[in-house]
Structure formats: structure tokens, C-alpha cells
Length: 88
Image (cartoon, rainbow, N blue to C red):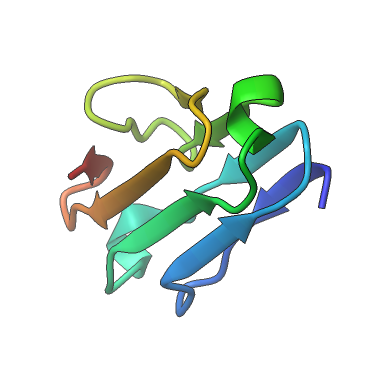
């Protein structure tokens, strides 16, 4: 699915198989479980980056957004109850 994608509160795994994706994270305080984002094909992030964007003023490891650029790259995000996300 090219374009912008917002995942749900119960989603745990997001498999990205389309180019040029922006993935919008929900408010971290409302998300109970970590989520893993996976580049599902060999060249999906290497040729077509995915941008992870947090909700509102939240941050991901202190950054306003994170870009996935490597083939088969994955990122697991842990929601923080105080706001924001950690990559682990």
C-alpha cells in the first residue's frame, strides 16, 4: 500500500510490500504492545524508503521521524507510557 498507513492499537506486525510508505504511529500511551515493522521484499526499503512518524509531538528515540532504508530491514518499536517510542 503506497502512501500513508496508520496502524491500529492491536496491530503487532506490519509487513511492508509497497514502495514509498509513510507509517504513522498511534499515540504511544494508547498502544499496549510493541510493534514490528518488516520490509517484506528484498528491495522494498533499499529502493523505496519507509518513514516512521510518531503521533503529534511524540518522538522515536528522540527523533521526529525514522527512515527505514535497508533491504529486509526490520524495526521493533516499544511504546512508552510517558509518551514516545523506543526502537529495540
